[in-house]
Length: 259
Ligand code: PEP
Image (cartoon, rainbow, N blue to C red; front, side):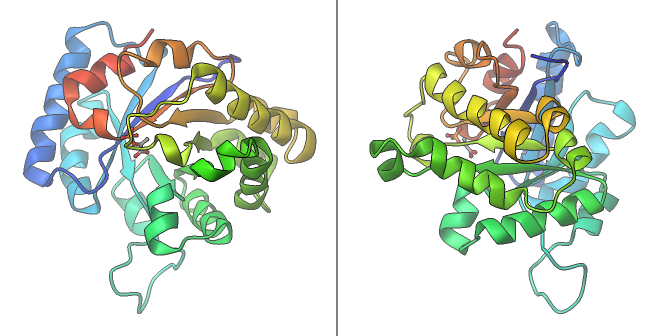
């Protein structure tokens, strides 16, 4: 797996207020440090609601705790009359390392298209942070066996106009929509089929071999400590985007410590 360090990112979604966040982050850090956490083997990150970011920053800043953090969304706009939106510069000022863009829940409930996701990835990169760009097919596409061409079309659109250097640094999360929050997990072979196809496509058709070798491709969809080892054994899977299981710090620590 080249020298890509797997990224285990816990997407809290709209859970845990800033008081609850303190307890979860401390427990996660304590559990990781109590065990054999090695940042060279896996990077732990929490992707938290906007209202938790300052609290999490205060807990981890200056490398006090070995956990990265980030946001779940960003505005495409730099500033101005966009009530309710949060800009990339605001997130960078809070020292976010990561910003998730194009999560299937944003696509489903907020009508985000691949073009909007592409714009969001660009503003995140321009502000010096790393986008975690989500792609993935719905159940009907999977039933028709069209998951690979469908996801590659998404990848082509969400990576449009990005340079090889930018793509080498970003994270793509392959999340089959039918596996998110459902308890239905893709088999490790299903995950590898699509993650491998994404990497080959970037190498052969998009930003080239160096970009493909550098970018990390996560799997997401009902990941738990009981299935992470087999998923991580796949050649093109460089980590996981974890929803429900990341709310339990002991369970999430086991996922981070999959190795
Ligand atoms: C997610 O929110 O990105 C996700 C994969 O959720 P879950 O792990 O709960 O399926």
